Image 1: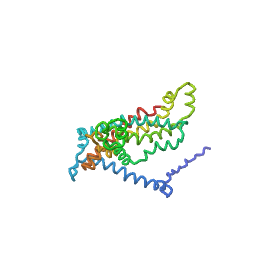
Image 2: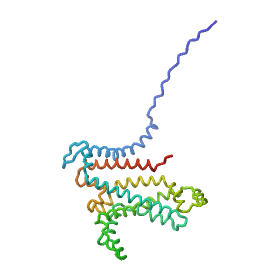
Image 3: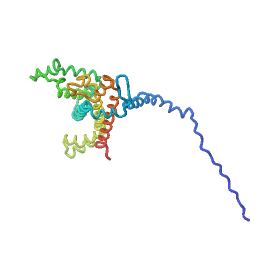
Image 4: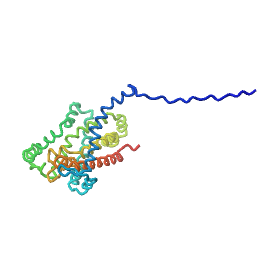
Length: 304
């Protein structure tokens, strides 16, 4: 005799309803102040600046201009002069500064160095000096008439150098100020990386007969590659935004030879009150920084 079994009905179970209890809300409540501050002081100014870049300022009147401010950049000779001046500083001063920082870091890492902590602090001290303060300091030191540098050069039989009144020497003066201020900072970054490199690599190179130069070339520099990329990107961003030093030392002169993108943006925004054009300059600067950053990561980043 065959028994027929009826299928048992399956009861569908609904997924549990997730209720926002106090424990679930707590992490978001802790993050909320930081997100709110970021939105108010970062996102909102960025968005408002882009909106301003679409307007033309005529006195107190602002009229919608679309992309006219960006088209104006292409035909503005002073913008291209400022871009060229900034590029010169980027291509000349930054490599010299980073090369000096690497050499300084290697010297500070030497076991033969005495009073190591004191010496390292001395080279890092310029970094904590305010930008305006050290700009004024260099403006006084390099003053063509009564500056200390020209007085010392005079004792050595060298005639006065027009540091701040000649187009070439004014750029050199800006480069010297930047190098003095940031070399020690970059050297400390390199030093921290050097101290983390395995000593076995240097010992193996010494066993193979590598001299000091070959150890620097084949062990130290490859080991410093990540932080070289870091400092290069940071220096590129800082140079493209350069404002304080040319503003305090030369005010963009002589003959706009030290006019940088940051200073040109400031002049349009806070001297001529052309906030729309200044905003367009700011966004053009952001695009340039982004492109250079991508190129640097492409050629210097880790390809493994």
